[in-house]
Image 1 (cartoon, rainbow over the protein chains, first blue to last red):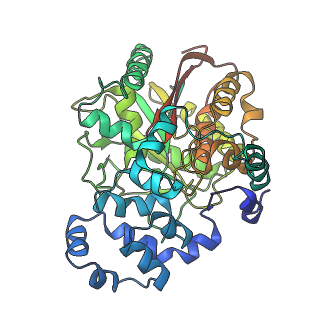
Image 2: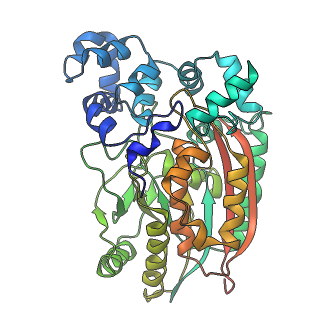
Length: 136
Length: 281
């Protein structure tokens, strides 16, 4: 059996485990509230006031207001919940993905059309470091 | 008597549903995907199914993080397509079959699978996209659909082995049902993809192709892949593939591959589709 801690050597991956689920509970509840049109309108009309209804940490609140997608994931957001904020604020999934991957939409789209991010060099942090060393 | 005639493995990428709903199926980017599914529809229609049990996952739609059931089964007469943040998909209401669904619930629980029973739930793209792919744009879905929802969002999802055993228990339950019925089981989600974090966009076609091959050559061994291997090699969200083992467990050991289709990419995901048919179908 693999406990969730054993996943920590996978690069660029935030397993939605017991830690993230607890940390992100209120953040994800906020995102879930955006499934209702009246809530989407209320949020977009006055974001800070709407966010006061949820017990967000300062870091979570900042990430939401800045539409920092990677930041939300790092603060316990789950992508399926966070993507509801993306839809509410007019971000395509591609735009969110490119932002998390630290690249432009054009580059991200080209990578996907070219077959996606390769597994070689991305299995573990060690493998990634090894590959980066090789390309320098 | 009811019997299981076939299983369908099918990705459920939301962007495919959106492309269909917005009439983009002939665009260069999407055409290969929709051509692949057009042939799948012919193969499935020729099997004349009259009931679908669809194994899928909810994406923070019907279930928030307040309740996280591992396996649940919908017993309602109907299930409404959900508004996931951009309005509900323009697809028919999903009709269930309470009598059959309750039979499944009783049989599964009394055979040691502790299902959560759901009387009311909305269904998201996880359920409706595979229906659109396998049945097309229709006014009504051609068969009732029993939703069987699996938690693959919050770690840990059920093991592949447990999913396979659930499929075997479903088969037993179906065969105990007195009405004549040709049942198809859908296993949905996957294939390789990661849609969060800096590793976003990961695709592993080699893993996916081996997975599709082993559905017929080594189904039981395939179901024993540990979670770690999905997350590492098929992307964090690739773990959805455990749901395909429920479908496979419900079929005969020697079910034959009748159709396969694989394409990269649809949005962030590798799209896979397979139809496995029981010998006496």
